[in-house]
Image (cartoon, rainbow, N blue to C red; front, side, top):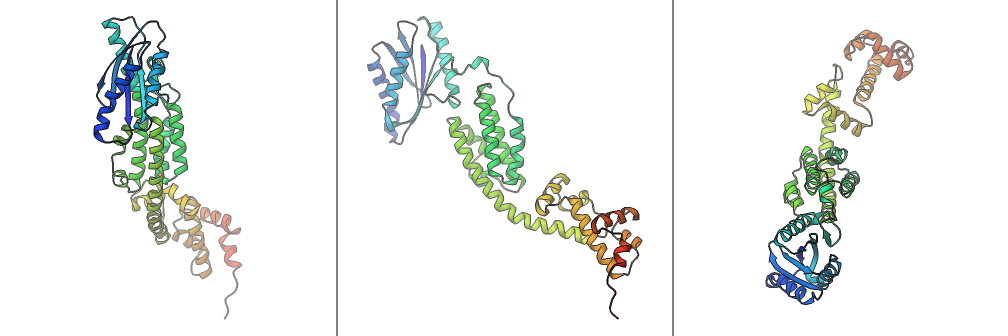
Length: 347
Protein backbone atom coordinates (compact mmCIF):
# COMPACT_ATOMS: atom_id res chain seq x y z
CA UNK A 1 0.00 0.00 0.00
CA UNK A 2 1.40 3.40 -1.03
CA UNK A 3 1.04 6.57 1.03
CA UNK A 4 1.82 10.28 0.85
CA UNK A 5 2.11 12.50 3.91
CA UNK A 6 1.57 16.22 3.42
CA UNK A 7 3.14 18.37 6.14
CA UNK A 8 2.51 21.94 7.31
CA UNK A 9 5.33 22.69 9.77
CA UNK A 10 4.92 25.11 12.66
CA UNK A 11 7.26 28.06 13.26
CA UNK A 12 10.85 26.82 13.41
CA UNK A 13 14.31 27.59 12.02
CA UNK A 14 14.75 26.66 8.36
CA UNK A 15 17.29 23.94 9.21
CA UNK A 16 14.82 22.24 11.56
CA UNK A 17 12.09 22.48 8.95
CA UNK A 18 14.30 20.80 6.34
CA UNK A 19 15.23 18.01 8.77
CA UNK A 20 11.64 17.39 9.93
CA UNK A 21 10.63 14.93 7.13
CA UNK A 22 13.79 12.84 7.67
CA UNK A 23 13.18 12.62 11.42
CA UNK A 24 9.60 11.56 10.78
CA UNK A 25 10.77 8.80 8.45
CA UNK A 26 13.22 7.52 11.09
CA UNK A 27 10.48 7.48 13.73
CA UNK A 28 7.97 5.79 11.44
CA UNK A 29 10.45 3.10 10.38
CA UNK A 30 11.33 2.32 14.01
CA UNK A 31 7.68 2.06 15.06
CA UNK A 32 6.38 -0.21 12.29
CA UNK A 33 6.58 -3.57 14.09
CA UNK A 34 3.53 -5.04 12.22
CA UNK A 35 5.13 -4.38 8.84
CA UNK A 36 7.85 -2.63 6.91
CA UNK A 37 7.84 0.99 5.85
CA UNK A 38 9.87 2.37 2.97
CA UNK A 39 9.84 6.14 2.59
CA UNK A 40 11.62 9.09 1.00
CA UNK A 41 11.11 12.83 1.15
CA UNK A 42 9.17 14.37 -1.71
CA UNK A 43 8.55 17.86 -2.98
CA UNK A 44 6.35 20.44 -1.23
CA UNK A 45 6.92 19.15 2.32
CA UNK A 46 5.86 15.59 1.61
CA UNK A 47 6.91 12.13 2.71
CA UNK A 48 6.25 9.44 0.09
CA UNK A 49 6.41 5.74 0.81
CA UNK A 50 5.05 2.23 0.80
CA UNK A 51 3.86 -0.14 3.50
CA UNK A 52 4.61 -3.83 3.22
CA UNK A 53 2.61 -6.06 5.56
CA UNK A 54 0.69 -9.31 5.81
CA UNK A 55 -3.11 -9.33 5.49
CA UNK A 56 -5.62 -6.91 3.98
CA UNK A 57 -6.37 -4.59 6.91
CA UNK A 58 -4.11 -1.50 6.87
CA UNK A 59 -5.77 0.17 9.86
CA UNK A 60 -3.15 -0.81 12.49
CA UNK A 61 -0.45 0.72 10.26
CA UNK A 62 -2.34 3.91 9.39
CA UNK A 63 -3.25 4.35 13.08
CA UNK A 64 0.45 4.04 13.93
CA UNK A 65 1.28 6.71 11.35
CA UNK A 66 -1.40 9.03 12.73
CA UNK A 67 -0.08 8.52 16.25
CA UNK A 68 3.49 9.39 15.26
CA UNK A 69 2.40 12.56 13.48
CA UNK A 70 0.12 13.67 16.32
CA UNK A 71 3.05 13.28 18.73
CA UNK A 72 4.92 16.05 16.88
CA UNK A 73 2.87 18.66 18.70
CA UNK A 74 3.65 22.26 17.73
CA UNK A 75 6.22 21.13 15.17
CA UNK A 76 3.27 20.41 12.85
CA UNK A 77 0.44 22.86 12.33
CA UNK A 78 -1.39 20.22 10.31
CA UNK A 79 -0.86 17.12 8.23
CA UNK A 80 -2.70 14.80 5.86
CA UNK A 81 -2.04 11.14 5.06
CA UNK A 82 -3.33 9.92 1.69
CA UNK A 83 -3.25 6.17 1.08
CA UNK A 84 -3.89 3.98 -1.93
CA UNK A 85 -5.66 0.62 -1.79
CA UNK A 86 -4.02 -2.60 -0.57
CA UNK A 87 -2.62 -4.80 -3.36
CA UNK A 88 -0.45 -7.91 -3.64
CA UNK A 89 3.23 -7.02 -3.72
CA UNK A 90 4.31 -6.35 -7.34
CA UNK A 91 5.69 -3.35 -9.29
CA UNK A 92 2.46 -2.95 -11.29
CA UNK A 93 0.25 -2.87 -8.19
CA UNK A 94 2.70 -0.60 -6.37
CA UNK A 95 2.43 1.93 -9.20
CA UNK A 96 -1.38 1.75 -9.12
CA UNK A 97 -1.48 2.19 -5.35
CA UNK A 98 0.80 5.23 -5.62
CA UNK A 99 -1.45 6.73 -8.33
CA UNK A 100 -4.41 6.31 -5.98
CA UNK A 101 -2.56 7.88 -3.06
CA UNK A 102 -1.63 10.85 -5.28
CA UNK A 103 -5.25 11.26 -6.38
CA UNK A 104 -6.44 11.08 -2.77
CA UNK A 105 -3.86 13.68 -1.66
CA UNK A 106 -5.25 16.13 -4.21
CA UNK A 107 -8.51 16.05 -2.23
CA UNK A 108 -6.84 17.20 1.02
CA UNK A 109 -8.36 20.65 0.36
CA UNK A 110 -11.87 19.20 0.77
CA UNK A 111 -11.19 16.37 3.22
CA UNK A 112 -11.57 17.27 6.91
CA UNK A 113 -9.98 14.14 8.43
CA UNK A 114 -6.22 13.68 8.65
CA UNK A 115 -6.41 10.31 6.89
CA UNK A 116 -7.58 10.29 3.25
CA UNK A 117 -8.16 6.76 1.91
CA UNK A 118 -8.49 6.60 -1.86
CA UNK A 119 -12.03 5.24 -1.59
CA UNK A 120 -13.03 7.95 0.91
CA UNK A 121 -13.73 10.91 -1.42
CA UNK A 122 -15.40 8.63 -4.04
CA UNK A 123 -13.35 10.40 -6.68
CA UNK A 124 -14.68 8.37 -9.61
CA UNK A 125 -18.30 9.25 -8.74
CA UNK A 126 -17.91 13.04 -8.66
CA UNK A 127 -19.36 15.31 -11.33
CA UNK A 128 -17.34 17.79 -13.39
CA UNK A 129 -20.12 20.39 -13.54
CA UNK A 130 -23.09 21.76 -11.63
CA UNK A 131 -23.28 23.86 -8.51
CA UNK A 132 -25.00 26.85 -7.00
CA UNK A 133 -25.12 29.40 -9.81
CA UNK A 134 -27.76 31.33 -7.83
CA UNK A 135 -25.19 32.07 -5.12
CA UNK A 136 -22.59 33.18 -7.65
CA UNK A 137 -25.04 35.39 -9.55
CA UNK A 138 -26.09 37.19 -6.37
CA UNK A 139 -22.60 37.69 -4.95
CA UNK A 140 -21.59 40.48 -7.31
CA UNK A 141 -24.77 42.46 -6.58
CA UNK A 142 -24.38 41.93 -2.82
CA UNK A 143 -20.78 43.15 -3.05
CA UNK A 144 -21.86 46.29 -4.91
CA UNK A 145 -24.28 46.96 -2.06
CA UNK A 146 -21.72 46.24 0.67
CA UNK A 147 -24.12 43.69 2.20
CA UNK A 148 -21.76 41.76 4.50
CA UNK A 149 -24.24 39.29 6.01
CA UNK A 150 -25.79 38.42 2.66
CA UNK A 151 -22.33 37.80 1.19
CA UNK A 152 -21.39 35.48 4.04
CA UNK A 153 -24.69 33.66 3.65
CA UNK A 154 -24.13 33.17 -0.09
CA UNK A 155 -20.57 31.93 0.56
CA UNK A 156 -21.86 29.47 3.16
CA UNK A 157 -24.47 28.28 0.68
CA UNK A 158 -21.81 27.68 -1.95
CA UNK A 159 -19.48 25.87 0.48
CA UNK A 160 -22.35 23.72 1.77
CA UNK A 161 -22.95 22.54 -1.79
CA UNK A 162 -19.26 21.79 -2.24
CA UNK A 163 -19.29 19.79 0.99
CA UNK A 164 -21.98 17.47 -0.37
CA UNK A 165 -19.17 15.61 -2.12
CA UNK A 166 -20.93 15.62 -5.49
CA UNK A 167 -18.27 17.54 -7.43
CA UNK A 168 -14.67 16.99 -8.44
CA UNK A 169 -11.92 18.97 -6.78
CA UNK A 170 -11.23 20.96 -9.94
CA UNK A 171 -14.88 21.98 -10.24
CA UNK A 172 -15.04 22.93 -6.55
CA UNK A 173 -11.93 25.05 -6.99
CA UNK A 174 -13.52 26.71 -10.03
CA UNK A 175 -16.68 27.53 -8.08
CA UNK A 176 -14.62 29.21 -5.37
CA UNK A 177 -12.57 31.08 -7.97
CA UNK A 178 -15.82 32.27 -9.54
CA UNK A 179 -16.95 33.51 -6.12
CA UNK A 180 -13.74 35.52 -5.76
CA UNK A 181 -14.23 36.92 -9.26
CA UNK A 182 -17.74 38.02 -8.28
CA UNK A 183 -16.32 39.85 -5.24
CA UNK A 184 -13.68 41.49 -7.45
CA UNK A 185 -16.27 42.61 -10.03
CA UNK A 186 -18.62 43.93 -7.34
CA UNK A 187 -15.84 46.03 -5.85
CA UNK A 188 -14.74 47.25 -9.28
CA UNK A 189 -18.30 48.36 -10.06
CA UNK A 190 -18.12 50.91 -7.23
CA UNK A 191 -14.60 52.05 -8.09
CA UNK A 192 -12.58 49.82 -5.77
CA UNK A 193 -9.70 47.61 -6.91
CA UNK A 194 -9.33 44.40 -4.91
CA UNK A 195 -5.56 44.19 -5.52
CA UNK A 196 -5.10 47.62 -3.93
CA UNK A 197 -7.46 46.94 -1.03
CA UNK A 198 -5.99 43.52 -0.16
CA UNK A 199 -2.50 43.80 -1.61
CA UNK A 200 -2.79 40.57 -3.58
CA UNK A 201 -4.49 38.82 -6.46
CA UNK A 202 -7.55 37.24 -4.84
CA UNK A 203 -7.77 34.26 -7.18
CA UNK A 204 -4.08 33.43 -6.79
CA UNK A 205 -4.22 33.73 -3.00
CA UNK A 206 -7.40 31.64 -2.93
CA UNK A 207 -5.57 28.79 -4.69
CA UNK A 208 -2.96 28.85 -1.91
CA UNK A 209 -5.49 27.98 0.80
CA UNK A 210 -4.74 24.51 2.19
CA UNK A 211 -8.29 23.58 3.19
CA UNK A 212 -11.89 24.54 2.58
CA UNK A 213 -12.19 25.68 6.22
CA UNK A 214 -9.13 27.89 5.79
CA UNK A 215 -10.65 29.32 2.60
CA UNK A 216 -13.91 30.09 4.41
CA UNK A 217 -12.14 31.87 7.26
CA UNK A 218 -9.98 33.84 4.83
CA UNK A 219 -12.95 34.74 2.62
CA UNK A 220 -14.95 35.92 5.66
CA UNK A 221 -12.13 38.36 6.39
CA UNK A 222 -12.19 39.54 2.76
CA UNK A 223 -15.92 40.11 2.89
CA UNK A 224 -15.77 42.08 6.14
CA UNK A 225 -13.02 44.36 4.82
CA UNK A 226 -14.54 44.74 1.35
CA UNK A 227 -18.06 45.45 2.66
CA UNK A 228 -16.72 48.17 4.97
CA UNK A 229 -14.76 49.73 2.09
CA UNK A 230 -17.78 49.61 -0.22
CA UNK A 231 -20.03 51.26 2.37
CA UNK A 232 -17.42 53.94 2.99
CA UNK A 233 -17.10 54.55 -0.74
CA UNK A 234 -20.84 54.58 -1.31
CA UNK A 235 -21.44 57.13 1.44
CA UNK A 236 -19.27 59.59 -0.47
CA UNK A 237 -20.38 58.57 -3.96
CA UNK A 238 -24.08 58.26 -3.14
CA UNK A 239 -24.26 61.74 -1.64
CA UNK A 240 -22.80 63.24 -4.82
CA UNK A 241 -24.84 60.97 -7.06
CA UNK A 242 -28.07 61.72 -5.22
CA UNK A 243 -27.40 65.43 -5.59
CA UNK A 244 -26.72 64.93 -9.31
CA UNK A 245 -29.83 62.81 -9.88
CA UNK A 246 -32.27 65.01 -8.01
CA UNK A 247 -30.67 68.17 -9.42
CA UNK A 248 -31.21 66.87 -12.95
CA UNK A 249 -34.87 66.16 -12.24
CA UNK A 250 -35.58 69.59 -10.78
CA UNK A 251 -33.68 71.32 -13.59
CA UNK A 252 -35.67 69.40 -16.22
CA UNK A 253 -39.01 69.20 -14.44
CA UNK A 254 -40.63 71.09 -17.32
CA UNK A 255 -39.43 68.52 -19.82
CA UNK A 256 -40.42 64.95 -20.60
CA UNK A 257 -38.00 63.26 -18.15
CA UNK A 258 -37.42 59.53 -18.61
CA UNK A 259 -35.35 56.93 -16.79
CA UNK A 260 -33.32 56.51 -19.99
CA UNK A 261 -32.53 60.23 -20.30
CA UNK A 262 -31.34 60.58 -16.70
CA UNK A 263 -29.33 57.33 -17.01
CA UNK A 264 -27.59 58.67 -20.11
CA UNK A 265 -26.86 61.89 -18.24
CA UNK A 266 -24.99 60.18 -15.39
CA UNK A 267 -23.57 57.31 -17.47
CA UNK A 268 -25.25 54.39 -15.69
CA UNK A 269 -27.69 51.71 -16.77
CA UNK A 270 -31.43 52.41 -16.36
CA UNK A 271 -31.81 49.25 -14.27
CA UNK A 272 -29.09 50.34 -11.84
CA UNK A 273 -30.45 53.91 -11.63
CA UNK A 274 -33.92 52.55 -10.91
CA UNK A 275 -32.64 50.46 -7.98
CA UNK A 276 -30.46 53.33 -6.78
CA UNK A 277 -33.42 55.69 -6.83
CA UNK A 278 -35.55 53.46 -4.64
CA UNK A 279 -32.66 53.07 -2.19
CA UNK A 280 -32.08 56.82 -1.96
CA UNK A 281 -35.66 58.12 -1.89
CA UNK A 282 -37.83 55.16 -0.92
CA UNK A 283 -39.81 55.77 -4.13
CA UNK A 284 -39.63 54.53 -7.66
CA UNK A 285 -38.30 56.91 -10.31
CA UNK A 286 -41.80 57.44 -11.72
CA UNK A 287 -43.27 58.09 -8.28
CA UNK A 288 -40.62 60.69 -7.45
CA UNK A 289 -40.88 62.52 -10.78
CA UNK A 290 -44.68 62.52 -10.64
CA UNK A 291 -44.60 63.92 -7.11
CA UNK A 292 -42.19 66.67 -8.18
CA UNK A 293 -44.37 67.57 -11.18
CA UNK A 294 -47.48 67.69 -9.01
CA UNK A 295 -45.81 70.03 -6.52
CA UNK A 296 -44.90 72.35 -9.38
CA UNK A 297 -48.40 72.07 -10.81
CA UNK A 298 -49.85 73.14 -7.47
CA UNK A 299 -47.43 76.08 -7.32
CA UNK A 300 -48.34 77.21 -10.84
CA UNK A 301 -52.04 76.97 -10.06
CA UNK A 302 -51.51 79.15 -7.01
CA UNK A 303 -49.84 81.79 -9.18
CA UNK A 304 -52.95 81.87 -11.41
CA UNK A 305 -50.89 82.91 -14.44
CA UNK A 306 -51.49 79.81 -16.56
CA UNK A 307 -54.44 77.74 -17.66
CA UNK A 308 -54.66 74.04 -16.76
CA UNK A 309 -53.80 73.16 -20.36
CA UNK A 310 -50.72 75.40 -20.28
CA UNK A 311 -49.53 73.85 -17.00
CA UNK A 312 -50.05 70.40 -18.43
CA UNK A 313 -47.95 71.34 -21.46
CA UNK A 314 -45.26 73.02 -19.33
CA UNK A 315 -44.82 69.88 -17.23
CA UNK A 316 -44.38 67.69 -20.28
CA UNK A 317 -47.72 65.89 -20.28
CA UNK A 318 -48.83 64.88 -23.75
CA UNK A 319 -52.42 64.50 -22.63
CA UNK A 320 -54.34 67.11 -20.63
CA UNK A 321 -56.79 64.47 -19.41
CA UNK A 322 -53.90 62.34 -18.12
CA UNK A 323 -52.48 65.33 -16.26
CA UNK A 324 -55.88 66.05 -14.67
CA UNK A 325 -56.27 62.38 -13.62
CA UNK A 326 -52.80 62.27 -12.02
CA UNK A 327 -53.42 65.59 -10.26
CA UNK A 328 -56.73 64.35 -8.86
CA UNK A 329 -55.09 61.15 -7.56
CA UNK A 330 -52.54 63.29 -5.73
CA UNK A 331 -54.73 66.09 -4.35
CA UNK A 332 -58.23 64.59 -4.38
CA UNK A 333 -59.63 67.19 -6.74
CA UNK A 334 -59.15 68.47 -10.28
CA UNK A 335 -56.74 71.34 -11.01
CA UNK A 336 -59.64 73.77 -11.53
CA UNK A 337 -61.24 72.72 -8.22
CA UNK A 338 -57.86 73.10 -6.49
CA UNK A 339 -57.42 76.58 -7.92
CA UNK A 340 -61.00 77.56 -7.06
CA UNK A 341 -60.54 76.51 -3.42
CA UNK A 342 -57.41 78.61 -2.96
CA UNK A 343 -57.81 81.50 -0.48
CA UNK A 344 -58.52 84.88 -2.07
CA UNK A 345 -55.55 87.22 -2.23
CA UNK A 346 -55.76 90.30 -0.07
CA UNK A 347 -56.25 93.61 -1.88
